[in-house]
Image (tube, rainbow over all chains, first blue to last red; front, side, top):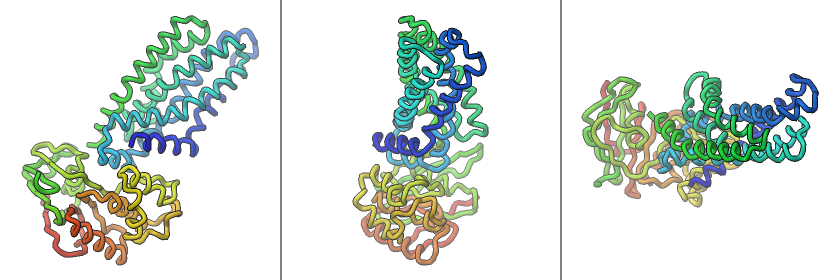
Length: 212
Length: 190
């Protein structure tokens, strides 16, 4: 059952909405040189951080479509009726969201790094930290989407909720990408794991509260 | 548990308001119960209680596996009708029964039409087709006649008859009298 729900998430995302975050990410990466000037050394120094900020803001875009449409349309009710636990629904949504969000954002990072002129080593480090970070960003997006579903202005509220929660990820991810400090990468992975393990339960509790 | 649905002394509390309390009922195989009453009296909440989507404020609810057709459509608008219904039939492991269920409510010729192109009445039939295909022992129908034409009402009567002859039960909330015979009524008063 969980496989079918994951498949539905992926199918619906590829139908359109999944392309928005990578395009937005590239847009931000393109704007950075205009803002700080085309100085190669400066761009190389701030490039990894700029890409991480772009990834974080791109992760906000899907929040609105992850849970609310399914709540309003009764899909969540029909899944519960078939004996699917709220945590399982949340897990399916996280996996389904990551399957499109993660690879596409990684691809966009590759292009974004080229736009900012990151060299081979910095490019590799940036891709690695983004790859480690995307599952956690997907999990946070689903958890925040569940918490804000059905509220007015849920998109703005979702951004306010997600960004502070993602700060540890940003600190360690950007510093591992920038300096190549091995400790930072380990800490980023630890934070990502923590978020990934907690999110299905937070999201599940929120989905259960939506029913009443 | 005896019966397909059992409410024991159930109270329902929603939005800071007590909708009903002390409600007891049982539904045996082959039975049909028509819940009636004015708007806002808690008919839909009663169905959600039976579906296990709401927890009772007091008392106990026991129910056999149920299929619910309410106002929410829960079908992916961009898919052809058969694929959209097929998602749910697949979860119910009833994919092979879907063509028959669609035929029973007069939708067989709309297989390939995207859900977003269908009319209100056709969508009402689609909700019904999902319930029919599930072959769940307990059907929960919220205003099943809304938007149905005469032919639709006759088809509803036919599928309900077959459902009850198979020893299964139905609980329906409706303003209008429901087609078919042998409905017990439960009047919810405000």
